[in-house]
Image (tube, rainbow, N blue to C red; front, side, top):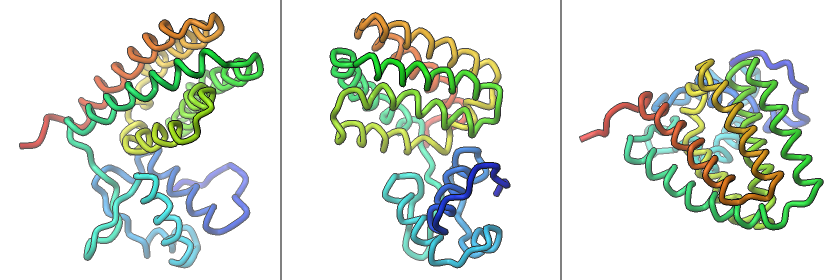
Length: 221
């Protein structure tokens, strides 16, 4: 796992959790890949106990799967599952955006603008930084609906495709397109134009599905 320039989290479990999320977000741990606990613990210089606890948290988030006699592994998606996840996201995110647009404060808008600027700057960094900044931008919007349970369900759906998302941000073309789409979303939010925000988000998701479909490949028989 890569050497992180970020400040190390205060506990060993949090440190392991951050490193595992980074590995999933950068494609170091790929879909379908088994998670070799002994090797990871040795590389991170930790015991198996905080590693197991971190994996339980990731399992609860839908980022890893545990199976008896097989252990933990990174989940794979079929093409149909990918479309299902994004279809459900479309339904829930549309409702979250309608609620959020109607009640966003100027402080909320400023937070979203700052998150968009951070994501724009991250487009010149690595895929992990771009993925992280992109997520923060979108959830700055969804949080505006003031419905924690709805936002958590959306977050879980995002987690289901995290192991694939890094591929999308490896493409310079995709990064540029995402930046433009983010700016369009912000402009619509500043106008409190919910329909335009929803339309922009629909196109945003459609582009991601198109790109990720090429990675996942044809539907399994």
